[in-house]
Image 1: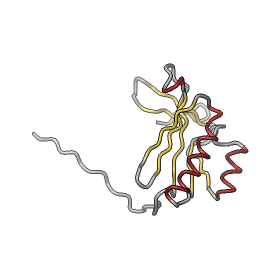
Image 2: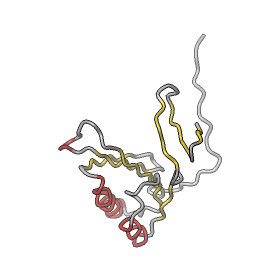
Image 3: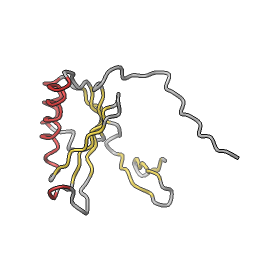
Image 4: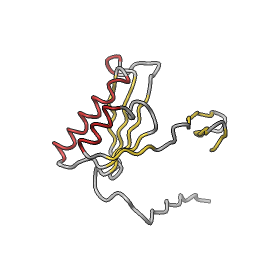
Amino acid sequence: MKQVKSSFKSKANIFIQQPFELIHLHLLGPTTTAFISDKRYSLLIVEDYYRCTWVKFLSLKDETFKVFRKFLKQVQNEKCVRIVTTKSDYSEEFENENFRLVYKNYGVNHNISTPKNTTTKWCCSEKEYIFTVNGSRDA
């Protein structure tokens, strides 16, 4: 018998109407093995409209703001569009005074995808992400 993969149902409401209206930010690391030039962190940037992905390699977490600001200016200069909204998890790298000033100056909204008291754990036996909120477990 032949298996046929069913297609995903399309969303009825598409909120993103133009490129760079929403980008997702995620900081990964530190890794046990270094990337290029002894860089152990990476900033993952995903543009929601076309699903384009950029990976910026960092030596330290403190470089996150500098790399993001450079990316923001690059998008505005090369693509002649502005980033409307960013979405990230709740982490101190994206929630500091430098980011708040850039968001304010460039008119960028910032949304947080997970609550402050949520931690993410990898559960090998269930092979899925487990979100723990105040000691309770939600899968």
